[in-house]
Length: 228
Image 1 (cartoon, rainbow, N blue to C red):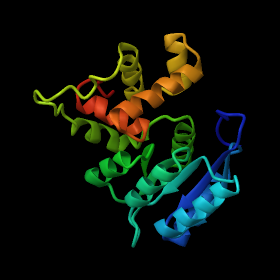
Image 2: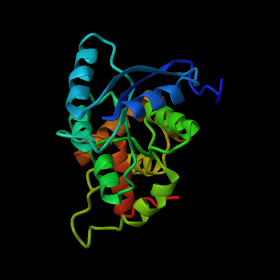
Image 3: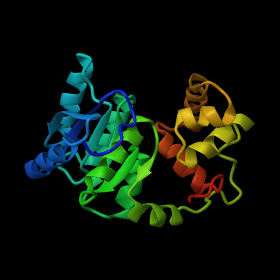
């Protein structure tokens, strides 16, 4: 099989796209990876939310959702926002044909853990899924630099948005913005992974955010961290 398995556990994936051909294509792409299993699909944001809530109720929710953004009547951004609010343990990777910077940022601010264009190679799709499952940020290379370059410090003398964070939390926020997962943060700071998770949760709570992706974007925007 293609690719080196990055986890001993199979990553459960749910596909949301309003085109049946796209859903079948993504299923075919992912079937070549031993560590990824497609456990369901939906043709709209509303259908996805209904099915995912039902799966959560019976304990079969996926770890990662691949979410198309251009859908009606509930688009992928709105569906992502609701999903992250009601099922924060499920990560979302936005997958779309629209290379629209404002849409990219909206999806990430809604809580998506990554963003890929639909013509991405199967290997990159698998990388994004694995990164999301680990709690990392993954953005298509063609979009990442333009997105990050568009983010500029916005405080302009306003109150420090990080005033409530401790020195250790500031340090961890910088590592989050650099794309490090909890395990890597724990290794760098010589703390347990559980402690790292607790720090991340406290950072999100203090900043009023719902995902580490939002925290990373805020850190870059406010000049706390510099994108690669």
